[in-house]
Length: 206
Image (tube, rainbow, N blue to C red; front, side, top):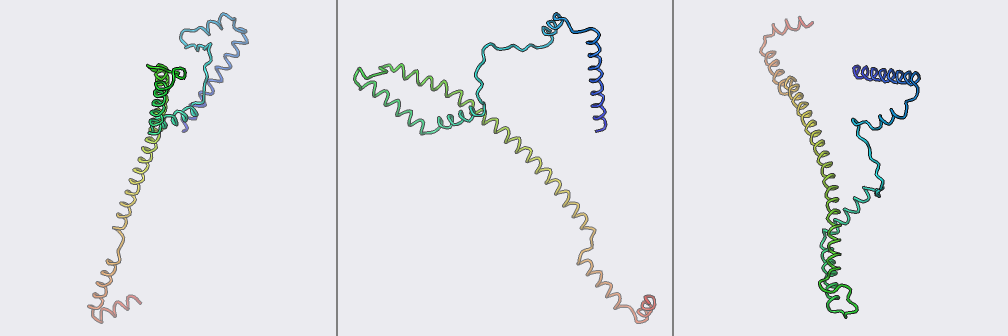
């Protein structure tokens, strides 16, 4: 941390020195002539931004993406297929059985073909856009699942180490059975001693 702070201070000092030097050079030499500015603008080692003469509409990508997902979901349902089939049957039946003056798309149904091709040309990019948005969401979910899994693994390893440390610590602690066995052996030893030994023990204890 200290090294990073020093580097930041050194960079700030260098920037201040460069700004002061540039300011002094401007005061001495005066403003640059327009030729130098043109040369600076037309440098070959720097990419130039081209300004488009035609301004295209820029809709809200999020709203347009939600709309495309709704359309794609509707296109992938059985309801859309049923309504599309009914519409095509009515179209064909009307243009075959209706009187000649009432027909608007006679055989070979060129207008119907145009409508279906327009629908397909718009439906394909909308479906692709919805799929791209779903792929982005899947990637985000995968990253979150991966990070969550890594945290779970780290927590499990930490708990495993803690449990092992507790087992190791409990191995060195005297248990109740061990204390009982020790007390029983001490009582047996006291019972087996002679009265003279007990008197000596009492004298030492007094």
